Amino acid sequence: MPATEPPQSHPETVHEDFPRVPEAFGPAPSAFTQSTLSARAGRRRRTLTTVVVLSLLAALGAAGGTWLLWPGGGTDDAASAAAPANPGKVYQPRPYKPTSTVEGRITYGLEEPKVRKGDYGKPVPGSWVKGDTFAVTVQRSINGYKFDSEPKWTINTPGEVCGAAENLTDQGQSVVLVRESVRRSGIAGEPVCNGVIAFDIDTGKRLWKAKASTDHDFSGVAVSGGVVAVSGPDATTAYDMDSGKVLWSGTTSSSDCSNTGFTGGSALLTLLWCGDDDNPSMYLQRLDPRTGKPAWNYSLTKGITAAYVLSADPPVIAVAAGHPTPTDVISLDDHGKMRASISLGVDRYSLGCESEFMTALQICRNAVLLGERLYVATSEELDKVNSIVEFDIATGKKKRKFNSQPDRPIYPLRANGAEEILVFQTPTASISQSGPTIRRSVTSILSLNPETGRRDLRMVLPEVTETAWILEPTTSRIHFENNRIYVAADKISGSEPENGRPRPWFAVAYESAI
Image (tube, rainbow, N blue to C red):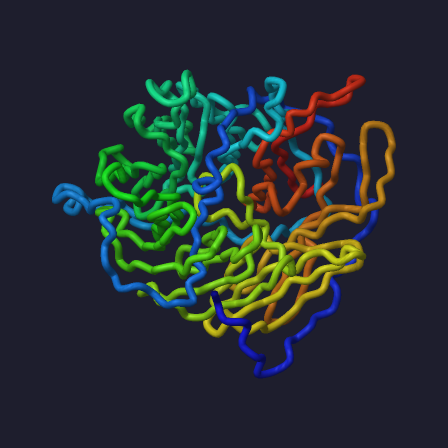
């Protein structure tokens, strides 16, 4: 078990409340809606793979760098394969700093498709933004939209999309998984997630397509170093992003280990689950994307119920010890050795770690790393007050705390340049209704400079009936690009509107009203 939080060498700095904003800000938003196709289904993976039970709280330092015969290393051809033009680079949008009014307006929304009865909560695996293109997966397709909501391109897939990489490459490429085959054995007639499709978000072109045997049922995919790494309980395969060529692969048919997923971006991490499910041994590894060989191997302590990668580079992980939500955070160095541990306690912090519908190991939406500092939100108190707390990942010490307004909880979303983070400020609980529009106080996006304590209102997000359920910082994907904001739900609500009310949206785009 990890050590408790080290004693503080000085009192933590507590900053004043975040700025107040008007209760009913601006005119009613546009009612324009762009329909989309059907919501893609995706079968919930077994808890081990889904939660990506990365069990790694390892206060017991790194294990020696022994290779665990997974994924079996690369071939000579893979090792000598030419590196991509920008190896390891992922697309990074410019800092979000709108210069016009903070009053936002809805540019367009994408209606939920009709789904079969009982398909409530079906996952939406992927959404990406680059330039003026917003792309989302919808059942059997990937759809790109211009910022004016006009469809820009559509890539039809041979089966339902069942997974997606979180990142785009610097060239705007990404990958989805597809249920392309029906397994010949096992559950009769159940589609297998064994198809891989790479695409370009700028052009809407399919770059290449691959298909594994029906013996493999992939559960996660990540992109790193010009390589697509696909994982499943019994096999992994790595493809060259540009050509689709297989670089390396491995199976666990002759071992007692399974791969629970990859995290990509500037580094490729994977977690191995070995031995008995009731008392497993787990190992976190950093791999060379081109060869599949480990740079280091970190042995995790037993007794962890779940764990999540907050950052691949530098490696920072959150783990749950005897509880379903994270209880500790661990930072590692470049050699896979523990730097520091942070005790979060039980239910004291809300990191937005989703244990369902996982497509990668990195699934905590409200834990933000800015340099050597980690920012997480405390759980809401009875009066709906919380704070954003800053920790030093080199020492594990708590450094600062930034308080919310009463009834306006706040959640960190992402780094915004090198000096500030973007923050989601929830609306108040009071609701007034006028026609089809439901007005709660306001949902706001703020910026926070931790060093100076400066907080600025960046945009007020108008809310209508169709968006009420997706404006949630802990479950939705919130993208920032060209000083615009895009919100995509991680699942389809499956609710059917009554009395002629509009169908809920599963994605929405905002821009400044002027």
